[in-house]
Amino acid sequence: MNYRWHLTEQLAKQQEECSLRTLLHQQWLLPNRLIHYLRTRRQVLVNGHYISMNEPVSAGDQVEMFFVGDEVRTPAANDYVPTNKPDLAVLYENRDLLVVNKPRGQKTHPNYRGETGTLMNDVAGYLAGTSDGAYMVHRIDLQTSGAVIVAKNPIVVPVLNRLISTGAIHRQYLAVVEGKLVDDGRWAWPIGKDPANFHLHKVAGINAQPAVTYYHSCAANEDRSLVALKLATGRTHQLRVHLAHSGHPIVGDPLYNPSSNEGMLLHGQAQRLVIPFTMKTLNIKAPLPPYFLNYLVKYKLA
Image (cartoon, rainbow, N blue to C red; front, side):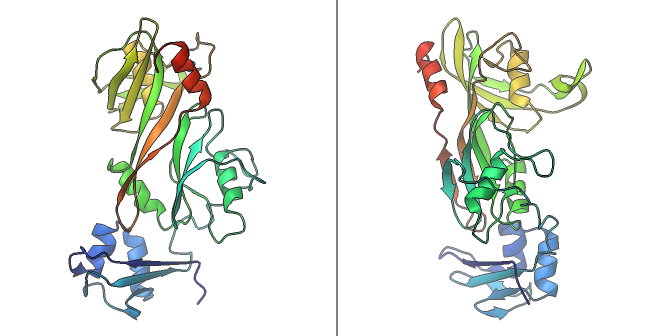
């Protein structure tokens, strides 16, 4: 049988003995669909041999998983036109994923088949000539810069999505906002659609959903403030809406601060990443763009 993906992991010395099913489902967070195919097709080997899901695995064991492609729901999700010689800032890479630094003004992904110029096109170009593909895990807004995770195979996509949904994987943002914001705290304003414009969102809008943002003032003066932000939930435009509602909209936000004619200053500057399978945690920094640094100097926020 021809396998599209063959993943091999050696269990760490500190691995506690558990059943193969527990390892796959509870520790590695593989969805039931993948585990079903691994079991029924005998596509999982421990130390070179197939074992049942109830048999134990322990420290030092080698676990191999084989996938044909029909086990995953989006095997062709990497169907992006590759950019020729992409200018891609790779912050971290391993067998299964990349963390890249998206520039302001670039879309994360195409909106229609054949579209080019997006971050995913660049990743596809970067991976061209290898056996890996570009699989989107999450996105950030067009005018936001910073760290973005891209999977190189579809097996880890549901694992990464699970880690994001539980908050184990998250980004910390930096924003320059209007006015003087000097305290630290938490905003828990629900966010829904803006009834006056369905392209926008607002606090307590239509079908509002819970939304929680943590904020920390890094520097401030009477005109501008530098704020560190962390999402506890992931509503559309959450940071932009919460900051605007607080009276401190992001400088240059074309939607929620339209009177500002500057470029938007929101950057995903730190990515807390949990590596699939090893479950080790890394903190990856996305350097601030020069225009952001220059702005901090100009307004004495650096």
